[in-house]
Length: 112
Image 1 (cartoon, rainbow, N blue to C red):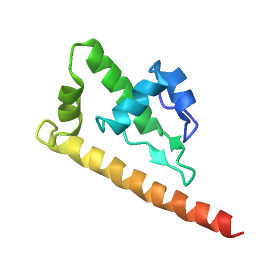
Image 2 (cartoon, rainbow, N blue to C red):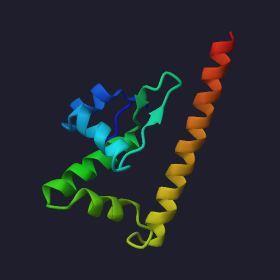
Image 3 (cartoon, one colour):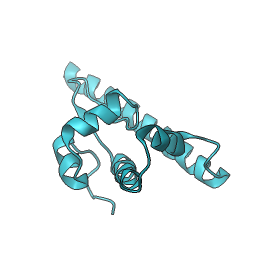
């Protein structure tokens, strides 16, 4: 399910996914499983893609995968077929472009 909203706080993500905030922080900082956007204020913002990744991680944990195993599966180029690789690379490139635009807009707003 894709939400109509583009960015979500950690509180919203916790409610949407059922994953506690401290767990989301752990997955980000210690294991590098998720990579939310960081605002200048250092607050996290999650996207719909992040929601889908978190739901997939939750599903894999429920099926007995370790966090390191999940990381290897989600981010290993060897496991993905060419179509999946292209799709993920395209999404990540698009996410980076949007993040760059977001940062530029924040700088413009600060200067006003």
